[in-house]
Structure formats: structure tokens, C-alpha cells
Image 1 (cartoon, rainbow, N blue to C red):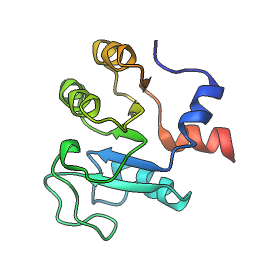
Image 2 (cartoon, rainbow, N blue to C red):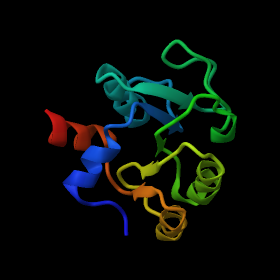
Image 3 (cartoon, rainbow, N blue to C red):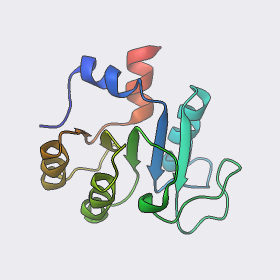
Length: 136
């Protein structure tokens, strides 16, 4: 079952580094504004977007598999049909303790695989909304 308790969500949000798959370079889009908010809260945000040249002053990675930094949370701003492949890449990493699907994105089967690997799975929740609700 996806994480739904405030206690577990707080624990997840104690992580420091968030790889955002589908991070947008366009202000005003949720896939830009949510990660921007998380940066303002002190998180390191690692952009993953093969179509952008620069986001937040850094070159984005083309895929999660290419991310060199250790990440605590993989935050997904991609369509549901892309979730299984992103989960595969997350599970190939030793560091990604949480896969977080943003508001409106769900994939129960992928979530079961994440949980079977002993990791946290959150779906259909916004990082910004949950952070504001739990910490402000």
C-alpha cells in the first residue's frame, strides 16, 4: 500500500536530495514550480529531462539511470504509462529509498514492485502540498 501516514511522509521528507523526473524548465507549470519550492526549502533538486538544456542553473540528466548524485526521493512528473520504466531505473539504484508519483499520477503495479523491494512508494500526492501541510 502506498504511504499515507503523516509520520511516514515526514520521514520521507527528511531526505535531502530529490531527483525530479520530468522537471520542466517552464515557470508556471507544476513540474517547475513544485521543485522550485522544494529548492527554496533547502532540498537539492536534481533535474531529469532529456529535452531541456538547463534547469535551475544546471544541465539536466537525460534519465534517472544517468544521475551521478545519491538521491533520497525520485519524484515523478511523467505520464502514468512511463511510470514502470522509471520505477525500473529507481530500483536499479541502491540509494533511491522513495518513489513519489505526483498528484494525478498512479500506478499500483509499479508501486507493488517498489514496496516489494523494501522502499517507500507514494502516489497521487504533491510534494509541495505535503511539505507545506506537515512542516509549515
